[in-house]
Amino acid sequence: MFCRARIQPKVKSFIWRFARGIVPTKEALARRHVQLPNQVCAFCEGELETDLHLFKNCNVVACFWLYSTLGLKARNHQSSSLSGWILDMMEVLRAQQLDIFFMAAWTIWVERNNAVWNGSDFVPVHAASWSMNLHEYQMQSSDQFSVTQSID
Image 1 (cartoon, rainbow, N blue to C red):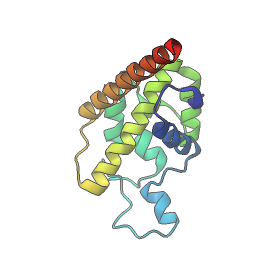
Image 2 (image 1 turned 90 degrees about the vertical axis):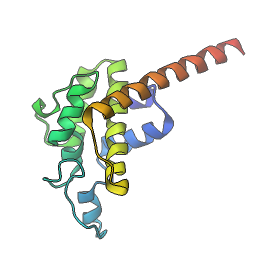
Image 3 (image 1 turned 45 degrees about the horizontal axis):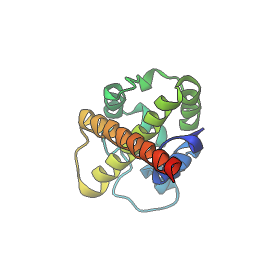
């Protein structure tokens, strides 16, 4: 389903990793014996940074999902794995909502990397707005590409 999503190729590549649970979270890196200063979540700084915690169960990320145009109450979904949660979302969301979901997950990852590597603060309402702007830009870009292709 994500192969047909109207999102940038780099986001599709991320979503492929996201769906397979192979995003390099701090916990995943530590399992591979990568030396890190800590393994706690870059957003809440209170829990181990697993993929499920980072994208779904973190209190700070829960605010982001709520502020997103999906208005998603991520913590209410009873998934014990990230892949299970993604499959659940693929069943309940329509195609455009799924594009928004994938772009939102990408936004979380970009913001997480900014927090880890640049010391940036994650502000859920700003991140949700940025995510929606990215999605709208992508929709306009892909519509323009479709029009250009049909003219040629």
